[in-house]
Length: 109
Image (tube, rainbow, N blue to C red; front, side):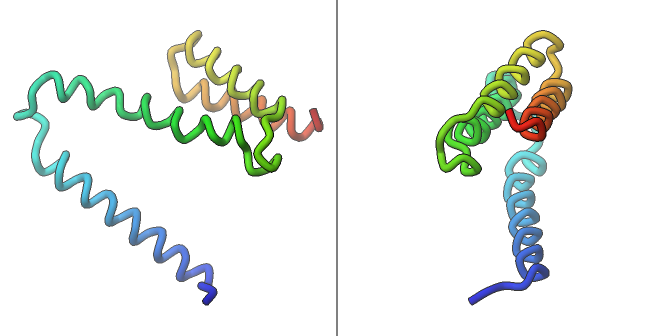
């Protein structure tokens, strides 16, 4: 069974809305004012914990290279980490890493 592009996007949007509503019912409707300060402080670290878990396999075992690490991805990850530590800005770190990865891949390094 193959799905059309419209059906695939409809499924993606439906899953996105469902995920948002599930999380919003817990975090948004419950209100953060009644939560203990420790829980509120720990919730701030959720993105910091999740993003490396999503990115690390893409750097160490990229599907584009059949699972073997390559220089462009490792260098881009190092640049991203370095810029993030230097500027304390996730946005600039991601942009710098993306620029380095794109440049290295286009240059064939």
